[in-house]
Length: 210
Length: 210
DNA sequence: CTTATATACAACCGATCGGTCGTTAATGTA
DNA sequence: TACATTAACGACCGATCGGTTGTATATAAG
Image (cartoon, chains in turn yellow, orange, purple, blue):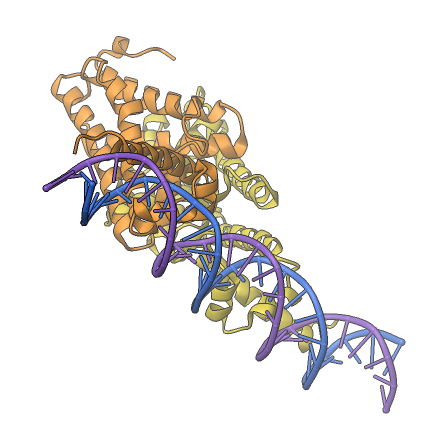
């Protein structure tokens, strides 16, 4: 298990396939994505997948995992550099919008597409997606709770309520911007959360004016 | 063109098929929906579709049209009975949440599913969906503008901005409620808009407290 | 060196996809 | 009555779907 040569090559191609799978699924969905097209996009053969995954569902589950790591890396981790409290809450929102704006994924948001695809379809993939979204929402809520504890948000704020609002206002930005074109939607999403936080913050100077 | 007998039967089955197509597409999407399964669900033969529609895309376009009419009937029309102004704006939001809560469509929301499916896929269906969503957003914005004109919302309110917020907060409710179960998400969506409107309304007595 | 394992492949499988064709029967039109 | 149209169907088409099998080969383990 020295993790080189053959083993390493396997890991590399596995990761390259997952990277492609997440990118393609952000456009066509995890089910809409076909193994044949994924093979073509990665330059490998279709049957080669089954050396890495038992069936399509296993690949879908690993793709969700990979997308979650990617989200953590691009959105969660950079945010933790901001000071805890209301500034970090807003930094979280801005990091998400930047993720969309930068076009990290060709479809904008993996989880938006996959949520819409699986929210009505019971199964392992749905459960894994629900868990990932639950963890994300829990993280947002935790940041809100910290801000309340620090006195940077009004004491009567319901953290779960505010976390829902931040998530909804951010998540719909990607679809609006793609469907109606332009960055106006991203601006709306940014302003919505900013105004909401400033209204709830005893010291609005912690946040940008606009 | 006396519209009876054969002609009438054609119209009836056409409408029955569209009704089923919208319902199924709210779960599996317009592309995920297959003609074979649609035939099974409507008790007709697959090849019979092509007497009504040239190809699948034509059926998809008509399904979008049908879903838009259904949305108008269930959400827009009832709302117009409320007095213009901030009360109608909130009534609009509540009518949408009731649409989800009542389970009018098995998948919750046709347009949410279809938006996620087509926002990255150029073509006639995407354009038709974008138009429908644009009209809806425009309607919401118009109601906000009326409320501002009536002095029931603060004069510095940006109608497009507020319309985005109302739409985003309402639309994400259906996914959250289905993925994480329970009506808490619907409550969050309701409260979010209610608090926002009350904060912007010179006479909060026009709106319920909670 | 030997042997088991893991990567990757081409060829192939049954099922299903969207779609075509030819036909039947009921209806609308003249 | 004569004829064109329409709804609806079963049978069938090539393409693609997820998945299986057998094989070649490079590596890891003994």
